[in-house]
Amino acid sequence: MNAEHIIRYRFTHHTRHLTKLTIISAVILVIAGSMALLVGFRILSVDLDSLLLPAYIIAMCAVAVLLLVLVLQYGYAHSGVWIEPDKLRVRFPGIDEQEMAWSEARFAVDEGEEYLLASKGKEAWDFSLVRRAMYACILRV
Image (cartoon, rainbow, N blue to C red; front, side, top):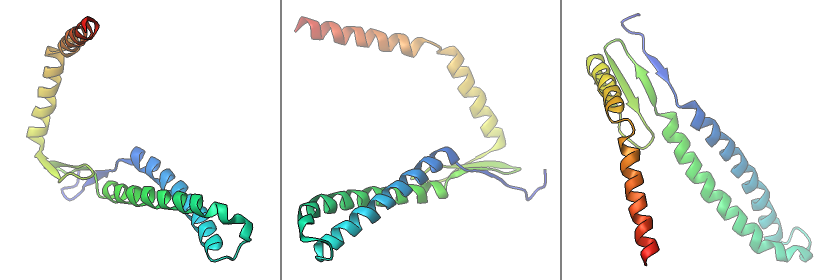
């Protein structure tokens, strides 16, 4: 591996879903917004005045969804996993970048695997006891 070679992996699965949602909300915004403006400025027929309020409500909801999705897309555009020869960097949307040397990363993976093997089934068993106790209290009341 080249000493200056950096490999970047993006979170493409979520980005694809956000792109579809962005396109859908933009189309809805254009249709409902143009309908509201045309009816509001009396360019369309007067008989369509009953569509003014629903068109504005749909357009405002589309604007809210579109702004939220655009912020999320910006976060996902700057996030991902960078693999470098001496370290590993990870950045999730809305969270600061995290950096770890390869020796620490290998230790963290091994430690996580040991924890999962050692505690296999214990969390689910504890949760089922708590859930049974909650249902017993509910049934008594």
